[in-house]
Length: 116
Length: 141
Image 1 (cartoon, one colour):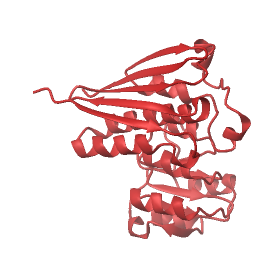
Image 2 (cartoon, rainbow over the protein chains, first blue to last red):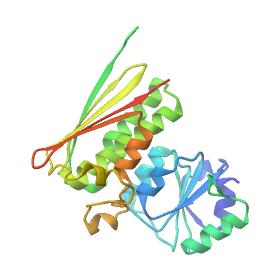
Image 3 (spheres, rainbow over the protein chains, first blue to last red):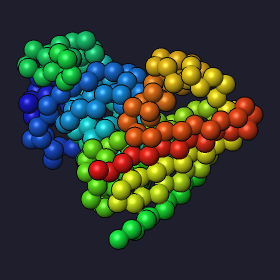
């Protein structure tokens, strides 16, 4: 699945990283606990989260995460957008809640990696 | 040929939004030096968790990184309260972080376990009221 397909599926708005919309994503992770995100290394992931602070972007950077989706319509601040842009990370924001957003992507075939 | 690069960072706890800057810098440098993505990511994860720990628990500290072709060694030194029970602290889910930290996405009790999991060697030297030094190594081959 491409970032563009993630965006379309979630009816999301692109906050930054428009130029990376054709990148492939292989797995997804939905969490508000950043250490849980850091505990499971996956390749070319999307991170869905309701947490909205600078450390979300840092965590994504450390994990080489391709795209962050903020659920429930949350919007990042300028500093977060600047950091994500610098790191080439796409930020999307969707009005869907966490459960629904994860479910919609799962339905389209995106998986969490690991044992599922 | 044995080239070694030494880097040192001061981690401040004044501004939580800046936590991770040292790890980010090291990650960028390792990438440029051409280390494999797996090595770069493992170093980034363990150092970032350590850096966050220093900010949460110890009012910051110092990090020294030594990079050679064979390994990346990190020494994270703080003068914080020390770790009272290392065995407990190493258990997944055990945390002494304040609630305010949980609302920021940390304090799940995964920091030290993650550091152990992704490093090839980890040693903790801690003394109550004096501070903690964590030494970690990631082997490159």
